[in-house]
Each structure stands twice: as structure tokens, then as C-alpha cells.
Length: 202
Image 1: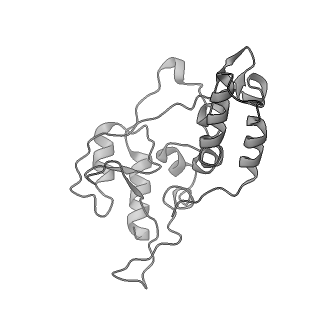
Image 2: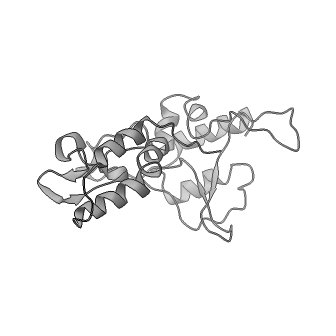
Image 3: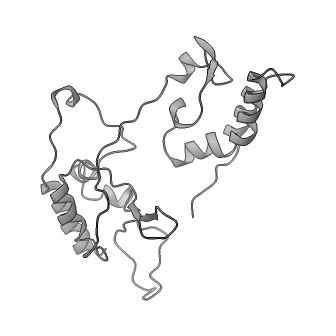
């Protein structure tokens, strides 16, 4: 996006018609690391440019001298390449407003929306209180947890927690659960995983 396109997009997000919260939802706080795009826009005109629409590191191969003011990242959602997800576009905008506003994004003027956006709920355990060092539920040690449920949030944390230790740690924990492992060293494996440098998306 150019600056003019971005400014018009932010204005449209702020003015767009939103879905009202139900009474029991009104006092539920947002998680700051996963805000609806219109809430980010309301917090400051440059907020989206330093979040999901950050243009750093991108070059237009057709015109390398012109740098984008803001970008929208599309992530392929199926093997055929017919479905793409708009990354970081959690929203409370009503469906009609979503289609109208998102079609102002360059390249999406004629987009067909297979599924429109909404809010998702972040639910996780208070791991230091409820889980032991081997990710077992203290009250029911036969139950184990991994991944986002344990309190990891965001791609970097999930990668540190899952990608580095999942194959070895989960396997050893499963063997231990079956009584086949001579000793339980999941805590040591997890500690090592959290000290490794996380993978980075390119």
C-alpha cells in the first residue's frame, strides 16, 4: 500500500460497522498481542504499520526503488493455492463491512471471501501453578499438556515450545507414561528447548 491507500484503509477500519459484544462478553479484556485490526487502528494511525502490516524487508520486484508504506501478508491455506488467509486480521467488523473494506486492499479488489473474519478466544492454563516440570497436571498426573494450552502465545513462543522439543520430549513423556522409560527427563529437555534460538519465518 501507498501512504494514501493505508490512510484510507485505517479510516475505513475505524468507521466500519462492528459487531456488538453480548452482555457477558463486555468486560472480557483483549490480549494485547492479538488485537482486532480496528482496535489497533484506533490506538494510533501507525500502529498497524508496526504490527501485522509492517512493510520492513520487502522489495517490489517490478519496481525495487519504490518501498511499500504498508503491506498485507497472505498465507496459503491449501495445497492447491486457491485459499489464502490474511495474516493478523482478527476483527469485529460486520461481514458486509469486511468485504467492502478488504476489497480496497490493492490486489484484492475482486477477491472472493471463502470465510470472513471474527475474534478468537485465547484460553490457556496457569502452567506454573497447575503443571509440574514435565507438563503433567498436578491434580491428575496422567494428563499432560503441550503447545499453546500451556501459555505460549505467538509464533516464536510456539516454535520454541513445540518445534524444538516436541519430537523428543513428547516421545519420552509418552514412553514414561507407559512405564517404558527408565527415567523422566522432560523438564531437562524443555529447559534446553527454551534456551535454544527459535526458528524464524522467512
